[in-house]
Length: 315
Image: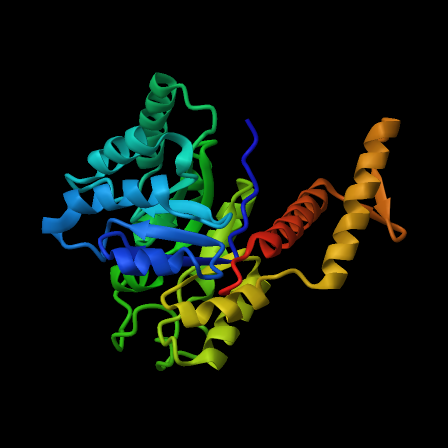
């Protein structure tokens, strides 16, 4: 079964236990709305928050958005209930489960087995996807293994704050990018960003960058988006609705990129119909990786166009 291509320019995280925030988020221009059961939910509200996730997935008007929730990490006593209680209640009304603080590929494989059992028991036809958050030195060191651990995995996500803490980087208390203006001669997140996107793309996955901490600093946000976009990232988390417009704009393919991608896809399909083993576009040979990238660009552009048709008037 091929991995679905989902539009992931922007992901907005919302505490699952805050009903008004959840309802507002469903009417915002985020590509992905993620109902959070992890960091933003107090321990004493974990059980009731699962019920809120079920209600939102069952009855919410998602306007074509990717339907996601973040479970608690696999080292907690909440994780198995986050999967069983939610998925058995909503079936395939959830698209993706985000797995935080992944340190070992075995965590993803275990979730794959569990979801497979639930899907078989319930007769679900659509496979539920997984996203793995890389938030520690251990997880970053094993990013390639994690990326290749399951066909159910669709994306890797960079967790900048926890990663910085795990390697002992000094922090000024900003949760996300924007806390990098310290005594360092370059961009101190360059290596983990580059390493993680390489691991993701080598396994055919999407790559999502961490949020920018200061939602009032639009210029800084756009710089952060442009940097991760230049490295090959597909999108970025948002911590505030005010960030969504800028994030979507930076991660929307340029018109010329779309036109070239269309030419590559058309040439590839035409070559396949002739049984040819090579593809040339604009007088240059195109390799398999470029064809795959072009296919993703075209699919993303079509999803953007489709989303524009179903976007609520209030946006």
